[in-house]
Image (cartoon, rainbow, N blue to C red; front, side, top):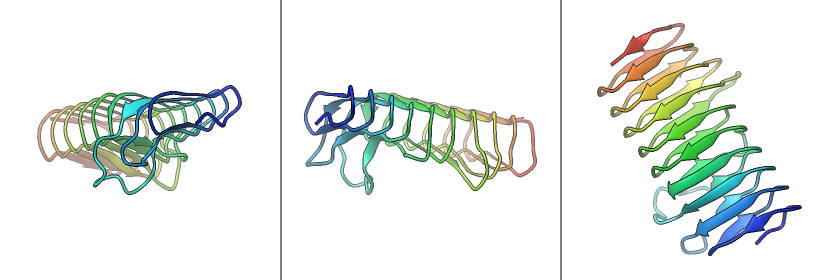
Length: 171
């Protein structure tokens, strides 16, 4: 269904509701691929229903999801992208990116959270950021960057954590 002005929808169970948005791919048992933000783009497949308790797709303005399966950019995130992977999520942030991997999350907090990136890996999390910016997790498993971290990076490894008023790298 293409309901937004100049919107385009293709595939099965897809909804393009934002102005100039595109939704494509294949939904799963009435769980639609959504592209609700203005200028948003979503083209992926929904395969699993269990971990998805909320609608999935590019819901924020100027967001994009390309390829992969079962992922979401919430309406509270803008100018962000997820490319490939499965069960990845971005919300409450600006200029965030997740490239591949699975169960990776970028979640802003009460303040401004910008320019955070996760590249691959499994269950990596940049979250609960009050003013965290310019952080990266590259690969690895169960790595966390939280709170007011600025300019921090975790490069591979398992169970690494950076939190608070810190700058630096681990891994």
